[in-house]
Length: 316
Image 1 (cartoon, rainbow, N blue to C red):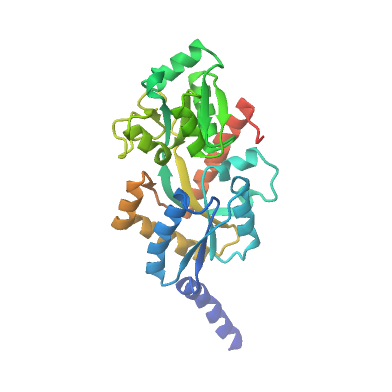
Image 2: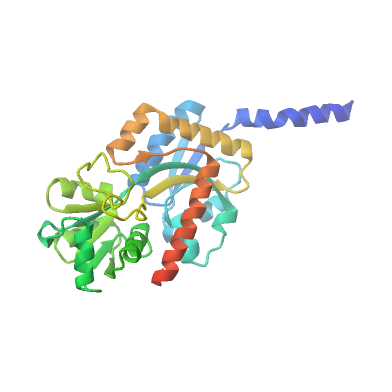
């Protein structure tokens, strides 16, 4: 009789655990400084999830080391689903660049693909560059002389430009900066040829006519800059390298908790008010299953590993 009772308790414990999660605050750890686009994204979706589950969704910034500080914090936290990290392409790029204290593929798992944010390539209006094909022609006429700025060495925008170099068979000099703002400042001063940044960083200068957008690295045009052709449209179908953002969790997180997190954040992304807020800053909601996001991360890791090796990119 006692054994039968224990079996019954074990049978119902799984569904009960799923229904009771979350029973305390959820923490979204930012891999970047507070106040930026990731902070905005985390708070926008977090507030909606909080209203749905009846628990606070806290946002805590732990920037540094190309997202590794935040990920290491996650792996030191209990694997219970109450701590997740908001990551971007560096999470998939890091294994090709660094000797890390963890195995990203084995120790973490995807929760949900939140949004895509297309990178924008801009040039100075006086440069004579009207589109990306003009840049390719100029680069082939002066191999290794043209320069491109990015928010930093081995960032996703840097690797995007290296990938474009492989696709278009061109070589330019990389000039890394510490963030989007200084790169754009140098472009405004015509001290670099082009700059690759997030659309949110460059859009105000494009709309004011201080910079010219020569291409956007997404499959579809951005609703914020509908007049700017994509690199796909300009003859580079393999140049869809949209910057993505999503949540990861400890790989040992209980399946019930992972599924609940995915369902609640997916529902938040579908809410009209959330979608409007995200669209207003150029973020395109994605959603989908945890398995789909995990597969996406692995595909990105393989893609960028080839670029890192072929172009001889280092973290220095």
